[in-house]
Image (cartoon, rainbow, N blue to C red):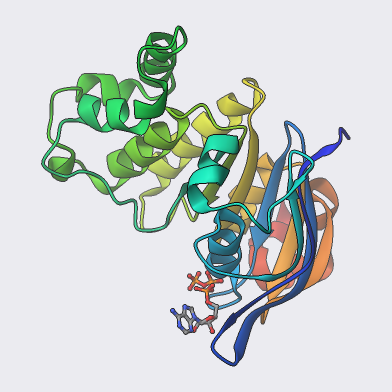
Length: 242
Ligand code: ATP
């Protein structure tokens, strides 16, 4: 695999005296899709927030070869990081298109801006159909598409997605995962937090399993799909038959 775009070296994150993430080491190779699986409360959201610089952390972390310790959230965005949070917060009184334009405001007027907008319509044709609709009137799945597309408008090198399938109907989940698979071809690296382990392991190159704030298992996604512990805990009995 290629050199990592992101590395974490024994990264810990605490809420007061409670350590929610403990000495997590991981790497996201350039252009790869890496997934973090784990039950509710394992520390997945906390970890993404720390990588983005929203929460303070201890330990080492580098992005594109540069230590993250002194980088603010704004610096990290400018360096090419983007996070789609679980809440999918949008500008609800603005149109779909204006949400996208705002997502790329740092790049407005640059040569690639119009192309990125066109690429978003191609990636999510539903958003093009709803171009002038207010974001607050979108369905849950469309909100996820818009939140993802808005994050992509800043042309990130690393896109972090927190539970993109949460609360969505299976058909919509399929569409979202299809779009994430399409993104691979653009060269963006992806760090995907998911509870839908089956879908995530089908898509990802490499996976980490987080439990109680610690990495308890890691490996190529194809191997984890066959791992008995993963099958029993995260894939359910159906995986044995398939
Ligand atoms: P979920 O899928 O339910 O979001 P998660 O794996 O993302 O789970 P986190 O949300 O990162 O887990 O939570 C990790 C631990 O940190 C949990 O024990 C949680 O209760 C705790 N925690 C999360 N946010 C806070 C906070 N703001 N203050 C104190 N403790 C928190």
